[in-house]
Length: 222
Ligand SMILES: *[C@@H]1O[C@H](CO)[C@@H](O)[C@H](O)[C@H]1NC(C)=O
Ligand SMILES: *[C@@H]1O[C@H](CO)[C@@H](O)[C@H](O)[C@H]1NC(C)=O
Ligand SMILES: *[C@@H]1O[C@H](CO)[C@@H](O)[C@H](O)[C@H]1NC(C)=O
Image (tube, rainbow, N blue to C red; front, side):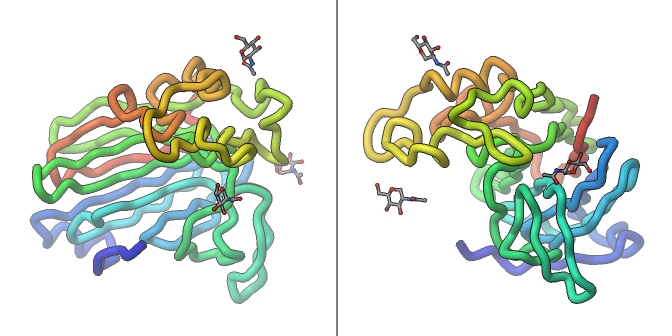
């Protein structure tokens, strides 16, 4: 996947730009997480810490997630139990399942932002994704105890897998043709009704804001 050119700028500079977009990423978990953003990189966030990423223009697509139980050396190489991105502290590629995922996209044709939470890569850390500007106010949340209640066949170290990850079948992954909720996708939907739980879940799970909205992502919002 090719990401468009983007610019990460320091917070004070953002106010010079008409279309500055800010993602505030906050760790409210009792434990440390290693936040990941593509584009954006990655950062260790201890309990209560916030990481702010600014874009002078919105990226076409952005993914934000939490990694858990990581160890990195001084050069930023290492590994994580969940959400690992090719062993890098500064992510440049997608994370390994399981991990809860916040996704943001810019529809440049319709001049709208769309934003959603997804469990298509499974679940590791409870999350909230909330617009903070432009009068856009609908928060989305996936904060149930999915790891604790995970069906046996989906259990994974540090989280709960999506059935597509485990079974890799057309039924769960949606190949060609119709795509419907499954027994196992309903396990997620019952607990996270705002989240994408199978690939064609769009109608209930995509949220829209005006172009140029800023957002807050909170790990462990409860
Ligand atoms: C992962 O980290 C959490 C919180 O620090 C800890 O409670 C848990 O035992 C760790 N899990 C593993 C498999 O190391
Ligand atoms: C899933 O199945 C498809 C074909 O059915 C295969 O091409 C792909 O490599 C499989 N993915 C994984 C992760 O096993
Ligand atoms: C799947 O569906 C069957 C029949 O409706 C039900 O008995 C079973 O408990 C379900 N499994 C899960 C994991 O929800």
